[in-house]
Image 1 (cartoon, rainbow, N blue to C red):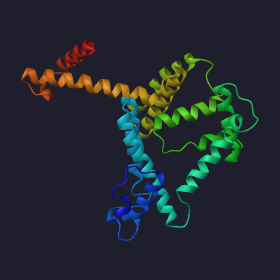
Image 2: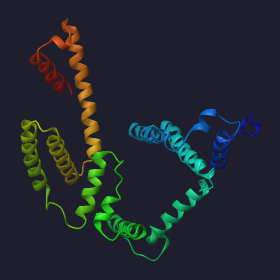
Image 3: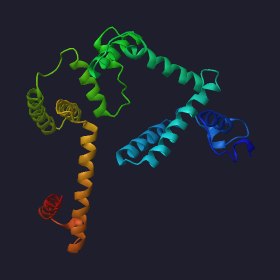
Image 4: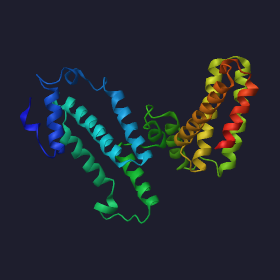
Length: 266
């Protein structure tokens, strides 16, 4: 047992860094010692989404806990690199502090920025300079493919829109949905799965474009609809159970009727 950490009333980030180092050290925790960046990659994603869930629920207690889990992931990955004599947690903190100072010249320098729009414009310019990006294409390519697809599509569209490659208003984006829908119909009718994948991707991309014009987060919109579907399906399943006939044996017309009932109850 490590006595130093047994009965402390309050711990700090320095304690967390040391605890993770102890867990990873010889004689520490067998599971922690075995982990790599790749093996806990998914854990990082899951912890981040759980922090988002806490925000959505408005739970401060849950957010406090989940932010700790996210922070532990950062410390853990930094510890793995420290063991390779690459970098440590202090280097991570140093890097983000320097980035924040450089990207806020209107706070830490003599640049003028009176509005959020001016701040974002400066931020993008500084970011492109830091990454030595000389074109918008390079900026678009910097959007990680690992992002959720809807989020990535929106970010790519926003970057293109900043240089005028965009519809003048939402009507063009809406018309594009109709055009892409017809192309999806044709692709499916042809039986060409590769073509269907291509055209369905175009349709989804067009829907994200409309979301952007409507100032609606595409990820949030789809999550909301998934929740709505789940609630309605639950009602349909309940009504089917009350009918005494297995749901799979009920005609679609009956299930659709239950579905419409569920809609009217919202």
